[in-house]
Length: 313
Image (cartoon, rainbow, N blue to C red; front, side, top):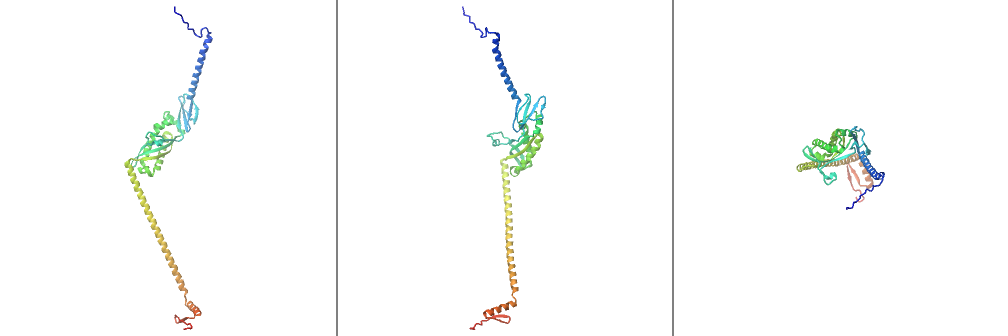
């Protein structure tokens, strides 16, 4: 006969209340874990951090967009609410084909191919901007809940490039490349500010040209113009120097002539005064003085004759 094995339940023979206690204990633990997880998820969904220099726009299906925005910091919001962030502090958009302008080893080429009077130029630029705080709630509604970065990446960047191309034809290649680059930057800034404030609630504080690149043929033309300009400036400088030197020489000659005339006039006047002072009485007095002193002066008629009246005579 085969031996019959008896696998008995450890709870066999125990009262029903005692066997139910371990099961209830595990259920309670599971419920606590589930509750903690649910609470954590609730807190994560209800806690929103608005970064420094940003504001948050709150939206709910029931109430729509709230008029009051969230300031920087942590905020508890309803789990069913949506918060989108908009930078109101200054941000910088770089449009360049130089990775170094992005502080990176590689980056997509975002330079601006801009038309100018005389040819095309490649512009590398930095655009400093910020969203206007009073406009962000309207932007949320206008652009279907897009946040600030999404608006800039998908629309504003393309608009900026298009508006830059509307400004640059007013300037020549030489203006943009060298002479009036700061004026071009200022004009672009003012135009972008006018357009983007109205369209996107964005303030443009500056649009700076950091580099201008030309194709080889256009670059040679620009160099030739610069060389001609430098030569013309040098010729004008030489001309002005010669004129100044001639005027200086003339002034020196006139001064020397004036000195000569003055000296001659002084000498003539002195001679005139001397001649006027020699009278007949003066001559006779001088003769008398000489005769008295020397004894050899004789006056005969109108002429003075000097004779020797020494003892040996």
